[in-house]
Length: 62
Image (cartoon, rainbow, N blue to C red):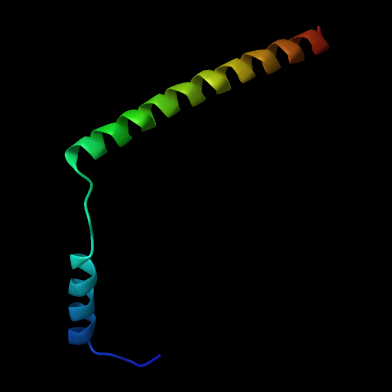
C-alpha cells in the first residue's frame, strides 16, 4: 500500500464525508420507535422466561 501524506488523507476524508446520507427526521423517529418496541418485547420475553425458570428451580429444590 502506497504511503500518502496528511494532506492527501484529509482530502480523501472530505471526499468520503460527502458521500454520507443522513436519515430524515421521520426515519429517525420511526427507527427510534421500533427500537423501543423491540426492547419492550425483549424485556417481557426475558421476564417470562426468568419467572418460568425460577418456578421450575423452586419446584425442584422444595
